[in-house]
Structures are given as C-alpha cells and as structure tokens.
Length: 128
Image 1 (cartoon, helix red, strand yellow):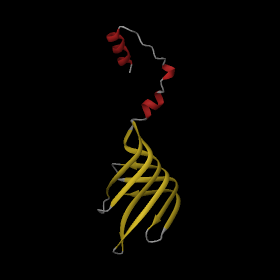
Image 2 (tube, one colour; image 1 turned 90 degrees about the vertical axis):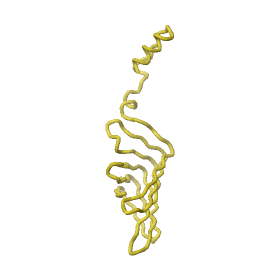
Image 3 (cartoon, rainbow, N blue to C red; image 1 turned 30 degrees about the vertical axis):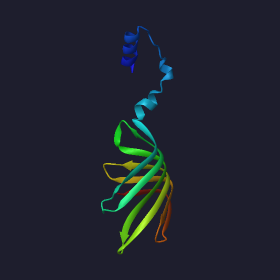
Image 4 (cartoon, rainbow, N blue to C red; image 1 turned 120 degrees about the vertical axis):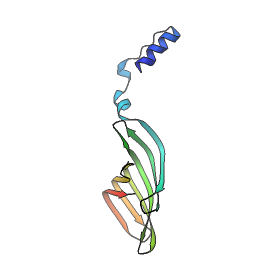
C-alpha cells in the first residue's frame, strides 16, 4: 500500500497523505476476501448432491481452507435403507472446511428431513 502511494506521487508529481489512523489494518490483515450471497454446490463422498447458501462469507489470510459463513441455508441428500432423504439445514453461522470436506454449523442449528426427522441443536458437523 505504501508503495502504491509513493508510486502515485512520483507519477502525478503530487504527494498523497493517508493518515494511518484511517486505515483499518485489522480488517486488511484478517480478511482475504468477502462475498455476499455465497453459494457452494457439489457432490459428497457418497456421490450425493449438497448445496450451501449464505448471506455472506469470508476467508482469512492465515487459514485459506476455511470459509466463514453467516445466515446459512443448505440441503444434503443421503441414502438410508434404500431411500433418498433430503435434509434442509439452517444455522446462524458456519465454517466450511474445504480440505477436510466438512461444514461446522454454529448457533440455532435446525435440520428438517424429508422423512419427518427434526434436529435442533447449538452446533453440528456434517461430513460432505
């Protein structure tokens, strides 16, 4: 960032000053990128489809494998006793670990299954 300020001053022959107090370094160093209306879809280890939707998400520089999500909705499909069951899932937040292929749902977790099962819990991990 400093290099850009210096280069800009050299090319435009003007000196630009940005007070350090105006720069939010915590946000710059902790968030690699932010997304809104994030959607992830794929096939789980059993060959069944899943989808995850979130109001927003972000990654951190120090851990690129995890995507932190807020206001999460999703569906998974599983096969049980020869029948396919769709699970509709929602939670306040989640941590989607791309390398371990799991999602940790956190806060006000609800799972409503097409077979009538319901789960309400504070936290749940789903292996994808």
